[in-house]
Amino acid sequence: MLVKPYTELKPEKVEMEGTVNTTIRWLIAEKEGASNFFMRLFEVEPGGHTPFHSHPGEHEIFILDGKGNLNSESGPKSLLPGTFAFVPGGEKHQFENTGSQPLKFLCIIPSDY
Amino acid sequence: MLVKPYTELKPEKVEMEGTVNTTIRWLIAEKEGASNFFMRLFEVEPGGHTPFHSHPGEHEIFILDGKGNLNSESGPKSLLPGTFAFVPGGEKHQFENTGSQPLKFLCIIPSDY
Image 1: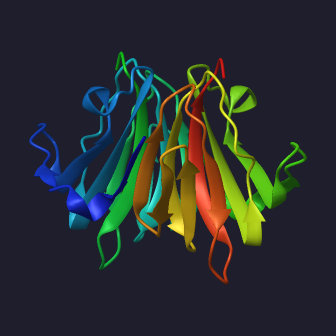
Image 2 (image 1 turned 135 degrees about the vertical axis):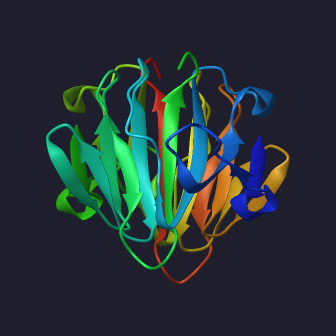
């Protein structure tokens, strides 16, 4: 059983093309013993965003802090602390910080993403 | 794509034997389109706890608010906002509120729990 504050993990810069001012921490993945689904924590700085992209694996999202938009082909939806989101595999999406503080969220993905 | 504040969902009392003063909200499950893993939000009131039990499916946990212990056969581990936990399938575990505010956490489970 692993129990740890996420702040003990060092954030890594997300280098994927189309990403601006965003870090990731892999909280729970293979090396923690997970095999079905993995938990990551993202921080998007003010003015930053993830790429507008799609992939086969779904996302389950929970907003921890900050303010932003979840952009899709049907337009933006507002994100605030306590907002959750399900992004089915194959749907284009982008997380964008529209506030003045970091936008922090959990993103859980299947292991075969 | 589903985007919603968790507070729009009504908490349901957890009736499982050994549970005290605990509610659950199912945020993302089959009816939201998920098929691999499901996201739930628990609130344990002061003095409350979940059962000390085990089951085949693993838990991926993130503490949102409050103060508590994650009890296991090797003793308690402290939970605060920002703590994450991986509970492998088959390991006995219990969430216990040791504070004066609700202990709120996300618990993600495989769909075949």
